[in-house]
Length: 137
Picture 1 (cartoon, rainbow, N blue to C red):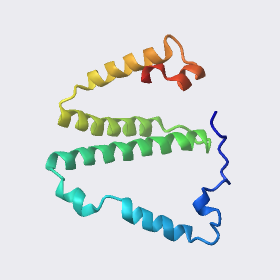
Picture 2 (cartoon, one colour):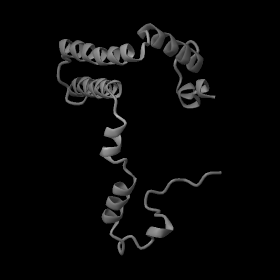
Picture 3 (cartoon, rainbow, N blue to C red):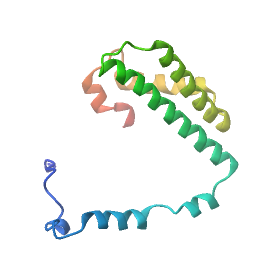
Picture 4 (tube, helix red, strand yellow):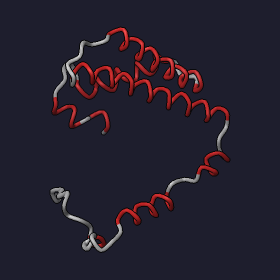
C-alpha cells in the first residue's frame, strides 16, 4: 500500500527547511545537474539542430492553438476558427518537418495512433480505460 501524498510532508533532510536556504539548494542542484550548453553544442549536428527547430516550432504552435481554445472556453470569447485552422496548419508544418527528417510517413504515425487508441479504448471512451492504459502493458 502506498502512502497518501501530503504536500506539507517534507523529506527528513528538509525537516528544518526554514533553516535551510531551499532556493540556494535548488539553484546549486540545477547548476550541477543540467547538461552544459557547451556539451550540447559539441554533439549538435545539422540534423539534430533541424529536429530541435521543428520540435520547438511544433510546441510553440500548439501553445498558440491552446491559447485560442483557452480564450473561447475560459474567457467566453467567440471561437476564432480561422485562427484555429492556421495554428493547426502551422503545427502540422513542423510535425511534417520532423517526419521528413526522420523519413517517417505521416500516415504511419496515424496508423500507430489508431492501433494504440483502439487497443486502449475499444469502441468507446471510458475513464477507466484512460486510467488503465492497457496499450502500455
